[in-house]
Length: 225
Image (cartoon, rainbow, N blue to C red; front, side):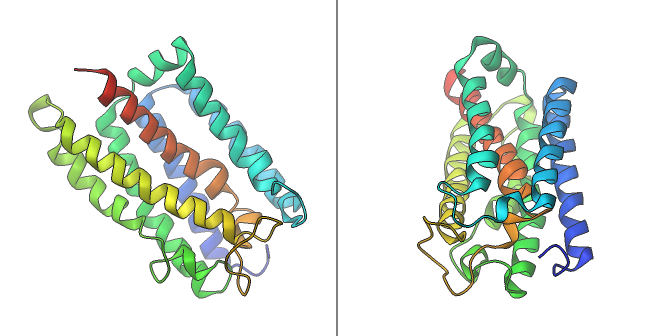
């Protein structure tokens, strides 16, 4: 698998991951967070390169148990602690909205991998993945929902609800397309690419960052007048 994916596609996704980290730092302005996420990304890269996630008999799948779940727990801890909530409240929501534009190049890479039979058709617009709409609409929301220093709360809430729903749709579908004991879809072409570097950085690094951006948005919009 590592040799089968064209180098330029792998390189493109590494760049996408790096840009996602930079956008997160741009919005959060926290070196501690950046360093922590970088360390996490390097750990996930090492696991992906080693073939650790390629065991298709594990329950739950290793990419979830050792990649996705710890990232989700970290978000929940941040949400549940006073220090974490204060940290989230300091984030620049306009910049976090811009962060969602990263979903455009992500979907381009997914489309390329579907065309090369490394991912299920479910993961592209030819299937049930319409997450690119979130990325395409993000610039317009960032430009028009923060005019004159005032947040358009109804627009931001509605947009974040729709964008989060699109994200959860593709994440849940992807989980059922991964070769594992819980696989329910795409038996003819499962999602094998996400078990290897660099595409394993999608569910373990990029998606959690996008999810974190949504969590921060709801935290700020629903707890502030």
